[in-house]
Image (cartoon, rainbow, N blue to C red; front, side, top):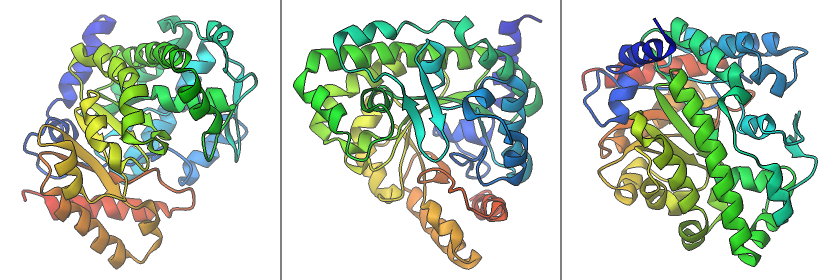
Length: 355
């Protein structure tokens, strides 16, 4: 069996899973559940296996990637695994000098702020990330009928890191470039869209059953700025992988005013943070998209009865959506009790079975 046949077989095994069916707005046996940042941070087994290994190195070791990706599936019984990586991995792979500093996040040695700086952003080739192909091959063999979600950072969020040189609260330099030199900004995002699309293609061709585009910082923009200055690049990414036929998920934080536009960019599923009820999100996004979300991650620190009550609110609001994947409204917080996540998965499954 060649690589393409193995990939096709892996996707065939997941095609009728609750997660893929929900993404396609088809009837499901129960509401599927997975969590952003489920593979890491809150799990003691994750901290143990990562001990002494830097984040970027972890992302480049297929054995570690496989083990970390599988950990929450084993422990929580979630309906999908998400590939363990980081949004800056493809930028590192094309040769940028960056690192992920503990407690800080991605830090770029030489920020990109001029047209000459664009020359450092060469196209991503599959061989640049051969470890991704290897790890996904290992994972799909282990996961069986559980779908694997590939992911990448969206052009705006990647651009923000590159222009600011690291995480930013107000994105001053990013917005200054976007408003002050629209053509350079457009060219930067177009180049990042190409890198992102290539990274997603590698994951899909290796066997990922769905992909998620994370636009973590795009909620900093007003709708018209998003439409004019960001949406074309995001749409280019989604268009580039449309022919594969896998569900495409789009997620950002603080994006209540952008939800409709994020759907228009080409997503099949729109991720919603905890600030907008799913019934209202359905109105904004439309009936031709499934939704993902959206329990506040902080709720998991409350007593179990409170967690269940808030989860039920999410499920009730989601009845308006044509398809629903239960998730948190953002990533699992580091100090979350792992058993709280396991209990939440069980509660959502039991509450929605044959509903």
